[in-house]
Length: 215
Image (cartoon, rainbow, N blue to C red; front, side, top):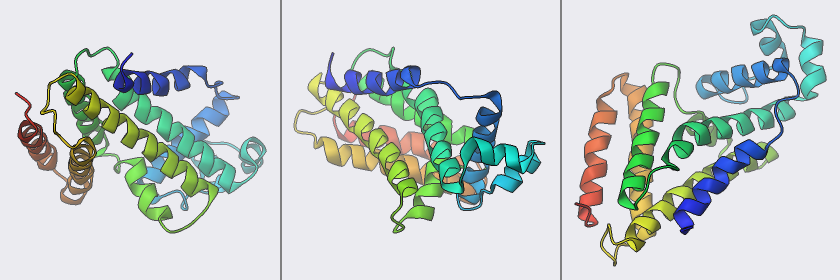
């Protein structure tokens, strides 16, 4: 399997190989924490608030996680899994180089669109929150983002390798430009409260791909 396909498959298989949540209660807590953190950040999470929101006792939540940091790490992990399921997994069945790249980019734009009304992207919020703050939570956030960066780069390389883009295309530069467009779409959609940034991002993505030789 080509490198681009292999790394996508690896990320998707990592979901299937992980043990399930230890209890429905734990799963509900982490999902609620993920949604809150996308709006308020990970520092805003508290075991007491989550217990209140879900109609649970604080002692029950503490028994499941033990500490705020453990809750934060579990939240990063589930956010990463949701991102892989919604953005990366759908492109696994797409053949070709450029087709898969376009599918991945569209998948990310749709992921961003779905979050405009609910507070935005978890990783956009938490990355800035923990920038310059060394911790295990920051490491987990950076690791998840590095996975995404690697997937995008490998799929760009795949498109070049299959002859769908100019052979002299700088894969790292192209991946950087595409990633910047995707991140700007998420930020601007929240700031402006409209879908216009996503429409313009789709146009900009096509312009960047065509500049690299895409038909």
